[in-house]
Image 1: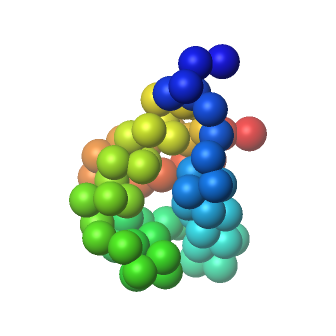
Image 2: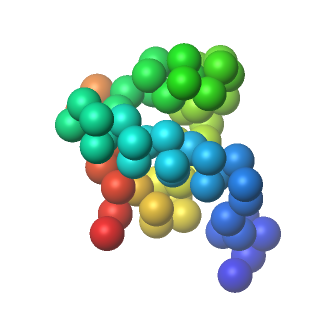
Image 3: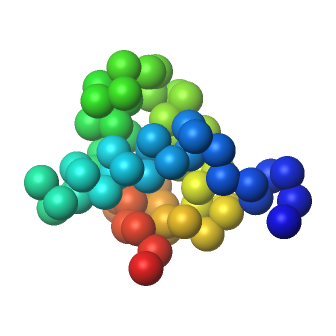
Length: 69
C-alpha cells in the first residue's frame, strides 16, 4: 500500500458521514458532508476525490456519491 492509499482517521470520518447520510436520506452531497463535519466544501471535495481514487467510493460530478461495496 502506498502512502496515498493508506486510510486515515479523516478518511474514515468522511466515509462514516457519507454512510449515515445515505442511510438517512438516500444520498449524500458535499454540502451535507461539509455541514455535518463543520469543514469547508473544498476540503470535502478534495477528500471525495481522494476516496474515489483509493477505491472507497464512486464520485461523479453533479451525479453524486456511491459507496463501493
